[in-house]
Image (tube, rainbow, N blue to C red):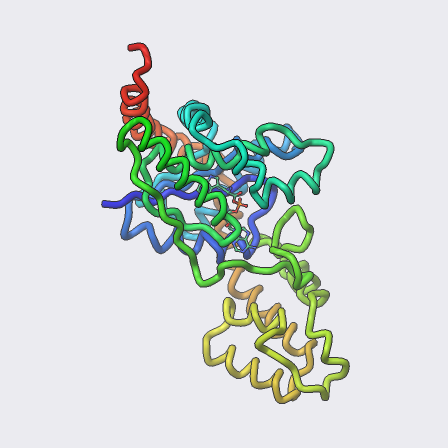
Amino acid sequence: METVFSGIQPSGGFHIGNYFGAVQNWVEMQDKYRCLFCVVDLHALTQTYDTKAMQERVETLTAELLASGLDPNRAVLFAQSHVPEHSELAWILSTVTPYGELSRMTQFKEKSEREPENINAGLMSYPILMAADILLYRATRVPVGVDQVQHLELAREICRRFNSRFGNVFPEPQPIHTKALKILGVDGKQKMSKSLDNSIQVSDDPEVIRKKVKNAFTDPTRLKKADPGHPDTCYVCSLQGYFATPEETATYHDNCRTASWGCVDSKRALAENMVKYLAPIREKAAEWKAHPDRIRQVLGDGAQTARVLANDTMDKVREALGLYK
Ligand code: TYM
């Protein structure tokens, strides 16, 4: 059975971009593959964060992942820092990683611009740790949003370089995408991201969702309600299909095109469908959050399983490298 690996940062939010861009796919893959899903807390250290909030962030994100349908009986769910082999393999892989490629990574450049006072070496070697995450479990499929494609290409390159120098230890991983390659933020321009302050969180209260949708970007060419809309390019219309049936979505788009609905009406439909769609996830996440001991148990069991697999790979890696026994 092929192995699937993917990760998500506990950087203080689980938004609908994460959900539709990656996690919905994770849930579906649980039945078909051996799956490992990781809360990548070591990656989150590369940006400034509040140390007192980290425990809570890992727990909240884990609760949200479980509420979204990840099942600890069918997938291994764990925190990255509980499996130290991730860091060990990252160091080893750094010795076959072309330095120039790291500095060309789009996310490195973006994050450096966003936090110019904190351009640390970890931010640059971030994709090496990602490669280690995946290769440590010899995973072949990696379900991610399109923003991670460049990192995955580098992981594949690192994998090839390691194998050609030290022997065929790792299979080459492939990215797997959902239909939601990239969900834009409510500004309608940039990728939805917690740090860009343009996200709708899966656990947002209904009133917060309504307010965010009400202020979302709409068709700038539509100056009054009587102007026909352009559902193919309208941000609000682009989200309808995630929360409504195909028939409802087609009707909403028609209403927009024929101007029988104004943007306010489209937004109202979107907000109400979103509230309805996300309610069960929000409620289940709250139930998990009320039992931190159970979350701890899930992550503890997950780490134990992951470490067995990680140790097995590290034995092969040390052997291939010719390290002293
Ligand atoms: P992270 O935490 O930024 O995001 C988690 C997953 O959500 C996807 N995603 C999106 N998809 C569509 N539209 C969006 N607006 C959007 N925002 C986020 C991401 O593509 C990702 O799949 N470096 C990774 C985590 C990671 C990882 C790994 C992933 C660490 N090691 C190994 C795969 C394999 C990250 O920061 O994801």
